[in-house]
Length: 129
Image (cartoon, rainbow, N blue to C red; front, side, top):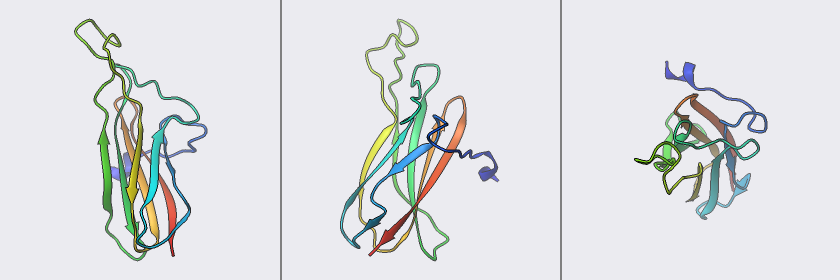
């Protein structure tokens, strides 16, 4: 199973863990902001050689066995250019902001892929009132 290869840890001590930041409780049907970032406490390099390729955000309502993909963001600029590695004019940072509205409590799951260190995931319970 793919889940055998998904790594988790404490985001404060591991630069690859996606951090989900949002309110713990939200009002049903109201939009709220969810931010997912990688490397908040320990910065991830995001260079031509070592970068976060994408972040995905899923939601699983209570009582469901299906995930709903809320967002997926690919990061394409890592400083690559014809002049050489890290010589390009653009770099991206691995941070995504999503506005969502939910009708049921559940869990948010963030997954990210590092080109060298693979898949990493985290989760956060969200209460909908």
